[in-house]
Amino acid sequence: MHKIIKNIFSTDQCNSLIEIASSNLSEKVITHTGQEISRSYQNEKWKYYFTRLHKTDIQQHFETVDKKLPEYEIISFRTMHYPAGAMIGRHTDSYMKEDGESNTGFIIQLTDPNFYGGGYLRMANELIELDQGDAVLYSYDTPHEVTKVKSGNRWIASIRLLLKR
Image (tube, rainbow, N blue to C red; front, side):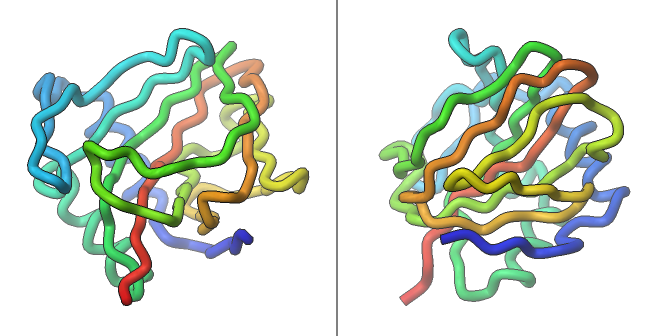
């Protein structure tokens, strides 16, 4: 199951989130469960960069998502940067114990797709085309992947959510 949602973030919000994630942030971050863990890493196999952000780092972005998806609780807010050569193979998500229980993914396209080549998002064998600021909401059992970025840089926000009961 997946659903495209248009215009979650403005162009300015997308650009400011990339700027924040690219800035000199602390090495550690406190998770939803209260654990202090490493904030950033590069995936050795797929070559993308992953950065966890705390609510205090991105208050405006956090509130925007919270207002657009009131039926969900934000568990973890991260960015993923795919430079040329980076990708992520077909997989399904699961919650990460250190972040806290979650069951839904939310990907927001931060980069204008005209500024990079390749890097296509495929969900359950369907090509998902998102403009800057658009998002896709999906259940963790939805297989998805990002093809290799051939040129430029692709940035997304990858948010883990828990459906409120």
